[in-house]
Amino acid sequence: MLSLLKTSVLVFLLAAVANSTPIEKKHDKYIAYPIEHFEPSLIGKRYESESFDEGGARYITKLKIGSNKQEVLVMIDTGSWNLNFPSVDAKCQGRKCAAGTTFDPSESTTFKNLSIFSRSYYGGGGSVQVSGFKSTDDLYLDDGKKLPDFEFNLLNATFYPRGIFGIGYITNDNISYIEATKKAGYINKAGFSIYTGSDHKGTFLLGGVDKAKYEGELALYDTHLAIPGKSITTSNGTVLPFPSVLALDTGSAGLILDPPIVDQIFKEVRDEKGKISCDIALAGNKSFTFDLGQGVEIDVPYSDAFYWNADKTACNTRIEKTGHHGATQNVGIPLIKHIFLTNNYDTGKLGVAPVRYTDESDIVDFWF
Ligand SMILES: *[C@@H]1O[C@H](CO)[C@@H](O)[C@H](O)[C@H]1NC(C)=O
Ligand SMILES: *[C@@H]1O[C@H](CO)[C@@H](O)[C@H](O)[C@H]1NC(C)=O
Ligand SMILES: *[C@@H]1O[C@H](CO)[C@@H](O)[C@H](O)[C@H]1NC(C)=O
Ligand SMILES: *[C@@H]1O[C@H](CO)[C@@H](O)[C@H](O)[C@H]1NC(C)=O
Ligand SMILES: *[C@@H]1O[C@H](CO)[C@@H](O)[C@H](O)[C@H]1NC(C)=O
Image 1 (cartoon, rainbow, N blue to C red):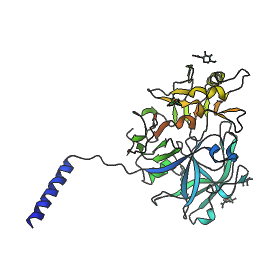
Image 2 (cartoon, rainbow, N blue to C red):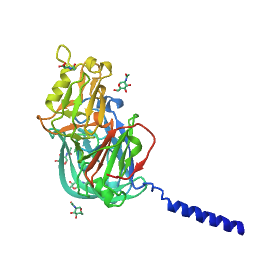
Image 3 (tube, helix red, strand yellow):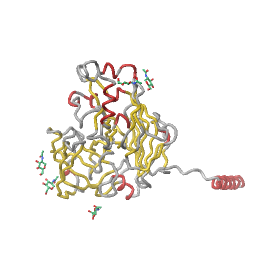
């Protein structure tokens, strides 16, 4: 009896000590989606054509939609604002859509057709089209929680190989996944982070920042997904200042830069016949340096921007020109894969730092 009493007193004392020195509360109000950093050329011929929509890598994740939690693969796109994916009988690039990319509304008891036809245009010239009917259904998170009646476009036709999960800034919480997740109470702040590892896998995090996944301190900018970068330096040391902001676009496989910048970059990699040469571009482990201001410098290897075609007869590039001098530049995966990117939509603060490849994780809530 006595010994039990002693133990209780001891436990009480320990509890008192613990209470007087508060331990930082672990953040658990976040949602993590795995990202597959999908390189089209790795999975076969069909994707080797380097058109705007198919070229280069993509960030792909899986959503669970409808009462029977159908799994649908979608591309994460910071450059657009809503969710769309093909219906079972839709056409993707004129063909039947690939397995795992479509949704069958007849199998979900909670699906609602809003019967409003919608056509969206993607890409610089607005040349890439998707069309379908506005609809709603429940979206499920991995732990079984749901976002009720989330609005999306159920497509009958798309020029992309799969749906687009637009996570750009918009305040309408019917169609913004990030705002809807906050409204449902699953996260504290309407913000996200994107990390890609060296193994082409990564994490799309809602409501948190993984402090283990970047080097140094985050540089913070007052913006939703566009930053005033300073300059790009080519491998031979030419410093080319950016005349306009850089929109950070995970839906883009390329680097769409101001015309004089692109002219200079290409000039340095042309052969004597004036053609862009992979022999020149890929020799000697060249890299660009993006100076994003605030002391953040990101190296991007030329091999992320130039690559041989399938039979090694021509050198392709992921660098393009904007429509005119001074227009917003658009930087996609060749840059984004080398950074940790996070944006708090509530405060309009965006954070960037060089990525740190690690399995460690230290997820905290937004502090900025
Ligand atoms: C949604 O409604 C439109 C217009 O009424 C119709 O054409 C379309 O087939 C419907 N889609 C589904 C999946 O029910
Ligand atoms: C998609 O639906 C629209 C509107 O009903 C129609 O005009 C278009 O032809 C359809 N596309 C395909 C590929 O079925
Ligand atoms: C969101 O959806 C609800 C229910 O359909 C509707 O009443 C409301 O107007 C919508 N809000 C916006 C901003 O579209
Ligand atoms: C870089 O290359 C360009 C084009 O060939 C040339 O004009 C420029 O002088 C070079 N700069 C250096 C530092 O070598
Ligand atoms: C190429 O350059 C990068 C830094 O720009 C360096 O980390 C890497 O080790 C270099 N690789 C080779 C093969 O020299």
